[in-house]
Amino acid sequence: MKVKSQKDFFSGLMFLLIGLGFAWGATNYNIGVGARMGPGYFPLMLGVILMVLGGLIAFKAMVIESETGDKIGKWAWRPLGFIIGSNILFGILLGGLPSIGLPSMGLIVAIYALTIVSAKAGDVFKLKEVLVVATVLAIISYGAFIKLLNLQFPLWPAFISG
Image (tube, rainbow, N blue to C red; front, side):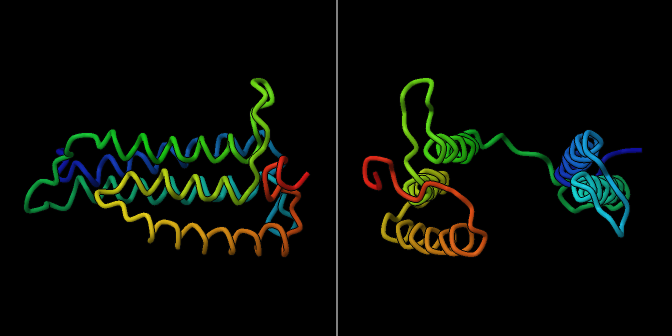
């Protein structure tokens, strides 16, 4: 069978592999049953749903003809680097790196850094808009994680909050 849409085929394959990874990782936890779900139940179901979705997308790519063939273009390395780098930076700023003596910078600083660095992945970077988005995201995160869920994230850097 011939692949008629490369984009859809490889997207489906990606969903299938990520779903397989989630389902396989979930087997390390107690799965439970529908009435009494264990910690592995949700990742297992998510993995199965992703695998089914990926299989359907890949099958569609092999059956339905597209006008252009939907060839895969070149990898967008710059945006990929900024997005992955911003997530790594977020984790480092939120938790710190004790091995090199970098203290935690807190949730607010980590969110601003994440938003600014990830916005550099786009074609247009407008600092005012990025700062507005970062502020809204910081307020929502504060409300959701600190106030509603009572999670014990450091909110500000240690040298500010003491």
